[in-house]
Image (cartoon, rainbow, N blue to C red; front, side, top):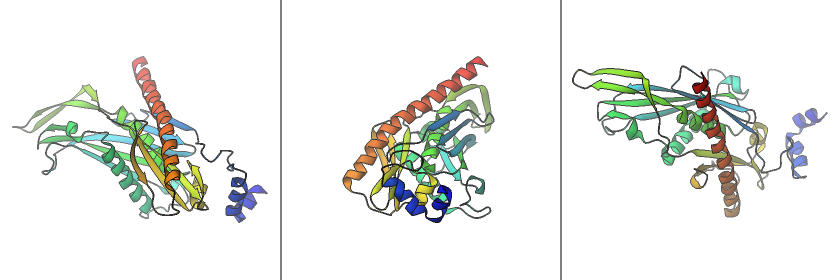
Amino acid sequence: MAEEYKSLHPLKYYRDYYSHDIRPDGREFFDFRPIIVNVGSITTADGSAIAKVGKSTVICGIKAELCRPKPESPKEGFLITNLELPSLCSSKFKPGSSNEQAQVLTQLIANIIENSKCINLEELCILKDKLAWCLYTDLICLDYDGSVLDACLIALMACLKSVTLPHIDYDPALDIKQANLEDRKPLNVYSTPITTTFAIFDDKIILSDPSNEEENLCTGTVSVAVLNDQELCSVHKPGGSPLSEQQVMDCIEKSKLRSRSVKKLIDAALRDMICQKNIS
C-alpha cells in the first residue's frame, strides 16, 4: 500500500515524512548513508578503486601512458578525467544517446581536481618538451542512487592515491624509452578534495546526501568540496532554490565533518591494499 501511495503521490509521500523530521529511509535530515571504499580491485590498471555511497556505486581506473607535453606547457604532464553514466546504472539514462549530465559532472570533477592542486602536473613530466605521463582517469557509475558526484570524488581520490608509476629510462637523442616495471613509485597526492551534496526540498528543507528519488523531487542542490578536512575548495550550486548565508555555512560545516571521516576511510582502504600486497 505504501509503495502504491508513493508512486501515485511522491511529493505528498515525502512531505508526510519530512513533516515529522524524518526521511523515508529512516535518516534524519543531516544524516549520511554508509560509505564503502575498496582499492586495487583492477589489477590491469595503474590505480583503481570502487566507492559506494548508499547504493550509488562508482568504479575508477587510471591508466598511465607516455606522451609529449603541450608546447604551451612543456614541463607538465596530463590528468584527463572522464565519467560514464551508462544505461545499466539507471533507467533515467538511455543507451546510445549523449549524456549531458555525465559531461557536466566530468567538467565539475576536473575543475575540483584543478582547483585543489592535489596533483602537481610538473611531476608527471619526465623530460621537458619531450616526454611526460598522461593519466587517463575513467569513472563508470555502476548504480545511480543520488549523490553520484560524492561517490566519484571518493573513488577518484582513492584511485589516485593507489597509483604507482614505473621508472622510465629515456634517450632523447635516439628517442628510445624503456620502462622499469620493477621500480615503481607512488604518485604524490597533496590534498584530498571530498564533496558533499545537499538537496533543497520545498525551498526550505535541506537534506544531506540525497537519494535519487530525493534529487528528482528537490527544488535545488548544492555540492560543497572540502580539502584536507578544513579548507573550502568550492561550492557548486546549479540554480534552483536560493539558500541563506547561514544555510550555506551549515552545509560547509557538515561537509568539513564528513570529509574528515571519508579521508580516514580512504586511508584505511589503502592500508588494507598494502597489507594484502605484502602478504601475497
